[in-house]
Image (cartoon, rainbow, N blue to C red):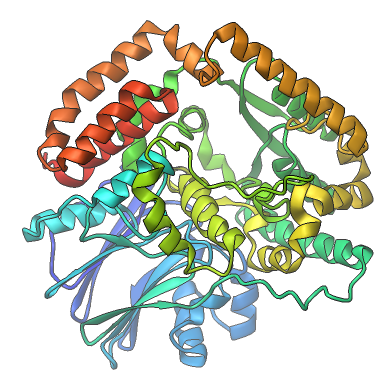
Length: 569
């Protein structure tokens, strides 16, 4: 992810991005610190990389409410705005920013450095603080390269490897190097005269009193008003810069509602992008909705295992911190686009989890574990229970771990092309959802009620998850679920293996993909063995041979990450 590097030691390290030709480079000396910029040449008015006699300021990303803040604090540029806000609000001035952002402010007079990420942590910062050395970077390879140049040895964090082999993402601030950590959602580093401390400026919590005496009608009205404001904030950013609109579209509810509300607010043309299996229900639904709004739609067929081959490039862009294979088809779609003409990549990320809740509806009312694989769950169980105790409840834990560190870690690769945003991640809307009793959100109850009340035409199109429209009653949905479960059982009987997924069967029929995976493991596993314990090596080997293609890709992610973090060119 393009951005910046700050260090208390001068370094000649070159900030390497996947697409350096899309970036602008700058350098400056800020008192005792050295700063380098390698930022995407886009949304430049929202960024800052400058200093005066009082402060040095770096802002990276996209500040959705920049114009509002400029008016409120009578600023001219992002640098001037940050300086004024810092003077008025103090060291957590950035708490009023909205959108995906990270940054740094250095107060020369106090010798105080502040480094921060946004409320949901989708524009992360990585840092290494050791003895007299401090390095902070927006891309993990920036920090790795700086450590190498300084002669600082990095060591493997085996717990992080087990996170990847179970959750398929990190559960905490870990990276594969014990010495490098990640700023989590709502955190900032405070470096006061060289002393480094970690602080939290924001945490989503539940206010059970907020809707205690409210009717369902009143709650629905608040959902709609807040969501519309979040959507308008995103789309007006495109229009501020004169960009065309582009949005993800699927057969689900999240991307549908983000796009639908954007249209309902203003007459807009939006290019819709869909990645799915050819002739899948998801494709059909997306095309029907595009036709309704007279939007163009671009569909990329996801019928092959081409995503398997992008392991090293995806691991670099994601820092190896989430499963590499998940977003690779989307990556290939972006490669073929002229992304310069479009503004934000509008998504519906985490809508199902926030307004819909992770908890299932019906009598079972279950919470998921958050893990992709259970084969090595015993290796992380005790640690996971300790991590869970740091959060208010299971839902908040799942949102900060599965949603923020898992699902939206993919934003790191998108940010090599453009900025990305989802109205469901808007701070005010997210908090509103947390304050709605989970009993109303479970099973998408309040979500569906909102759609049917305010956007009934959106409810006319099937929801891919249930292969039906949401206006059907519970009896009809139960009948559909029974038919779905029967189809799955028949499929497993035909396959004679209840653990094989359609993806596994596709892999078993693709000799080229099998050869690539085997060759990759054969080439990189010996190097991994030189740094890992005998137990971890054994566990990885068993997972690779006994697991399906998802688990094999977890192993590949760890092997590629080991190269990125520890193997010098």
